[in-house]
Structure formats: structure tokens, C-alpha cells
Image 1 (spheres, rainbow, N blue to C red):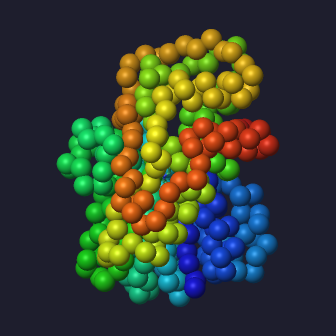
Image 2 (image 1 turned 45 degrees about the vertical axis):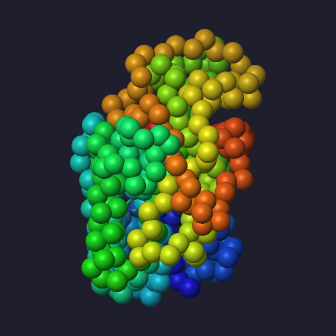
Length: 318
Ligand SMILES: NC(=O)c1ccc[n+]([C@@H]2O[C@H](COP(=O)([O-])OP(=O)(O)OC[C@H]3O[C@@H](n4cnc5c(N)ncnc54)[C@H](O)[C@@H]3O)[C@@H](O)[C@H]2O)c1
């Protein structure tokens, strides 16, 4: 089967590409390399089953051409960083919502019927229900990133209803693992390499967050697209645990053998739109026969190990 992965050169997308190729799929990787890394595709580029299209999702002509004869789209390309929405208010709208609209329209025009989409737990804003299930009360949005992803979910659902497509919408917690290039483990690790005597933490360090290891995330998505029964399947993906930011700092500093003085920006939130408590109810995904194999601690350690072996990535990212 010919599949397309948008965001193929990204952290999660490149891991997905490798898994799809290992499973025998033909893969069209689509990426504009805005945050993606060419070296993440080294193995894929050596495969005759992989084709790379270096283009932007806002380029509808390239997208339409790349979509020909595709049967399944894994749409992961996005502005994946929740933090800077208010500094660039149009970015999430363009890179997430309009880009997703373009993907759906190219699918419709090419008669492609299946889409799996990487949404986010950020769509829950600051939910009043914790652990947060997929059918919690309609959440108030607190970030432009979350709002743009919720709009993507709406578009996908409407295309499924209107044009007989099927959709799998995955609301991820933060993902950890090999090729991780953004997020607080990355930031803390880089800061500690520069100076292990101090560490500045956004917020009060008491924010509670949940994380999932990238291969567990991929296992869940593969399982869901095989067995989830509905035209539109909305699924939380996370672990049954959470840690405080301070606890993840404990894991990182113990691993590195450093004892920095911690300073705090203060307040319950690290930035505007930061949710101080993210913990998703993942019973729906578990009922489909999936469970994560790795704990948050193991995910953090695997991430650190990969960063230690790939220092080049620390310089490449702003
Ligand atoms: N990493 C996480 O913790 C996390 C959590 C929740 C949801 N997600 C979602 O998962 C997906 C993948 O995230 P990631 O962490 O791998 O991010 P990433 O930044 O590593 O990957 C995104 C990829 O998309 C590409 N891209 C961005 N805009 C594009 C465009 N307009 N046209 C073509 N390519 C474009 C980038 O170059 C990059 O390779 C995103 O949709 C993100 O919102 C990630």
C-alpha cells in the first residue's frame, strides 16, 4: 500500500516512516524541513520504497501531485510547538489549520479515503475533568496551538462525514524518545550542558505533565488504524501516570550527576497557554488492545541517551 507521511523528517514522523518501511509499505514522505532534519531520513532514503517530496503543505500543486495513488495519509506536519503562539498569532492557523485543510482537499481530489492525524492534549485547555476523557465537556481553549488543532479535528470529521472518508484523530500527551528535538527535556539538557551549576525553570516547577515514549505512540496508532471501528475515531494517547516538572528535573540531574541550583520564573504556568495539569484518560485506546511498554522515567532516560549521542541536534534548534 502507498502511504503518505506529512512531517516525515520530524521527530515522530521520521520514526513513523521507518516503522512503515519496515512493515513493507511504500512511503511518500512530505516535508518542508522547517523543523525536520534530513539525517532523520538517512535510513529511509536508502530504501527503494521511500520517496521524498520536499515541499510545503501550503503549496497545493505539489501536495496534489504527491497525493496521487496514495491510499492512506498520516498527517503529522505542523507547527508542533505550543509555546510561541501569541508571538506569531497566524502561524498555528497557517501551519496547522490551513495546512490540514489543504491535505484534506488534496485527498478528496485524489480519492484518498483514510487519514490519521496527530492532534494534542492541548485541545483540552485546562480541563475540569482529570484524567481527561475524549468526551469531556467542550473545553475552553487556552492556546492558539490547541485551538488550531481543534479546528483541524473539526475539518477532518466534516470531510469524513461529507466525503465518505475515515479518520483516526490522536490526542497525544508530550512524546519522548529518539529524535526528540523540542520540549522541556531538550531545553533542560541543553541548559545543563552549558552550565550545570544553575537551572532556570518556567513556572513554579509543580506543573504536572504526562509523557509517552515514541514507539509506544506508534504502536497505539498502528493498532487503532487496524481495529478502531468508527468513521471518525477520537483517541487520547498517553500513559497512566504523570510527573511534576521538578520530578523530571530530578531524573535528568541524577542521570547527569549534577546538582544545579534551581531558579523559578514563578506562577502556576510556564507560559500563557501552559496547562498546569495534563493527564489524559486513555481507556478508550486501551480497550482496543494497546498498552504502553515504557514508563515516563524510562522515556526520559531513553531521550537523554539519544541526546547524549546526538549533540549536533542541540546546535541546530533555536
Ligand atoms: N512531540 C510532541 O510531544 C507532540 C505532542 C502532541 C502532538 N504532537 C503533534 O505531532 C506531530 C509531530 O510532532 P513532532 O514533535 O514530530 O514535530 P516536528 O517539528 O519534529 O515535526 C514536524 C514536521 O513537519 C514539518 N512541517 C511543518 N510545517 C510544514 C509544512 N507547512 N509543510 C511541510 N512540512 C511541514 C517540519 O519540517 C517537521 O519535519 C505534530 O502535528 C504535533 O503537533 C506532538
